[in-house]
Image (cartoon, rainbow, N blue to C red):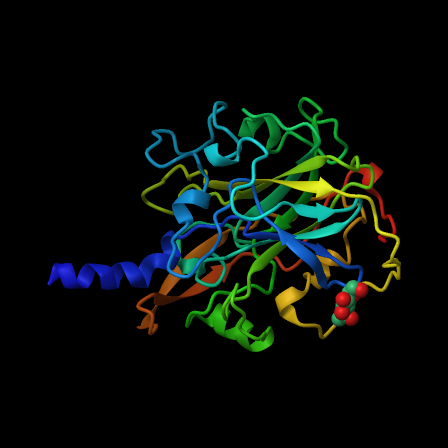
Length: 340
Ligand SMILES: *[C@@H]1O[C@H](CO)[C@@H](O)[C@H](O)[C@H]1NC(C)=O
């Protein structure tokens, strides 16, 4: 019996264990539409039907089995071993010009649409920090960069900058499931199912390259998803738990083409969501903001009576303050530049 049941249970709960990484990078045109060939992270494994690449792409800090779960260690590498050098595996680097807007897309895997799966997580589903550098290190340590590098480039050893601070929940993305958040979003943000995403709508961090990145060289991006468990919320982690996922990637910086993309139209509403930026974030790119988004936490999770068809219990969430706004931080020398 158990032999029969186990695969069924595993199948039902797969979304809970699957974690997130940057699946694809795409340049965003001034009207908010993805343009050109996508790019991929260092050491990328292509998503092919029937192939599980979670192990190859997930980078968890602190790693499973670490005695101290409340914080990262100063010796923790920022990048997964397969991503410590600027080496492509399956999928080329993105090509982008100085000042270009770029979408970094990832799957929410239920971390947005099934928030009751983990107790004590931030209401914004964690915060994504994107750092940029022209001078990456093979043995880059997380704690030398994360919450150390600053928008003005003066933080830490000064080798890089903080490019963006955004909510993991971009306000639109969903995985198809029967939870209320997913069902609401499926209705509100419909799109044609495509081979890459299927019927899901991937999340995105929309960033802007600094205007002064040198052409003809790679520019390195570190995507850091900081998804802590609040102390006192989960009996397994009375003092809370640090949980950070990263993706390391490079962009080949190329000269701007002569074609005039410079119409400052901003996001065009009503466009195909399969290849559209997040308007609330995209329209603020390049406009300096001084504060990261407020971090708010779930205050209680009350199980409801009904169970959904997927076998995942439906729960009612009470949040202290649902974060709807997303802010982006830019260093001063990356102030608005006209693209194109
Ligand atoms: C936005 O601009 C790009 C590049 O010029 C173009 O391919 C795309 O069709 C435009 N999208 C919309 C919705 O107008």
